[in-house]
Length: 149
Image (cartoon, rainbow, N blue to C red; front, top):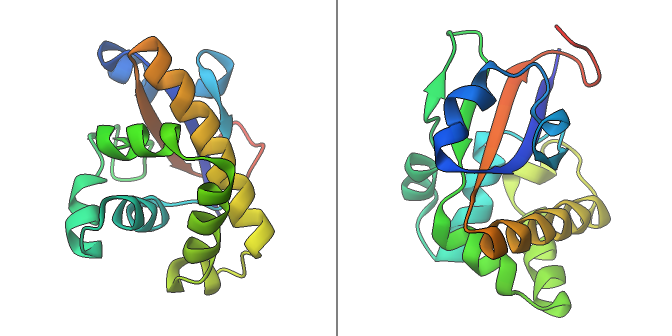
C-alpha cells in the first residue's frame, strides 16, 4: 500500500475542508503526486531554502491529521512556494537533478526526468498560488493510487 497524494492551491481557511475531502484535486486546482511523502517535500524545501534537512522536515510537518491513519495535511512553506514560482526553466532542471540525487528519491528509484517533472509541476502550481495569494497544501493518505478508500 502506497500513499495517495494531492497537491492543491487553496486559501488558508480551506485547510479543514481539504483534510475532509476524499480527493482534493477534484475541488481545488492541483495535481496528484503519488510516490511523494513528507521527507521528499522536506528535501525540496531544504534545497530551496538552504536549511538543514531536519529543520526543513519540521517546517513541512503535518498541520493536521484526521487520525493516526490519515489523511494528513501539510502546507508547503511560503518561502519555498515563492522560490519555486520564480525559478527559470534551467534552474528548475538543476533543482530536479539535485533532488533526484538525494537519498529520499534514489532509494525509491525515481529517475531524473520523473523528479524534474514533479519539480516543474510544483513550480507551475506555485505560480498559481503566488498569483492568487493562496497557499499550497499537500494532502496525503494511505492507499493505492486511484483508489477512493
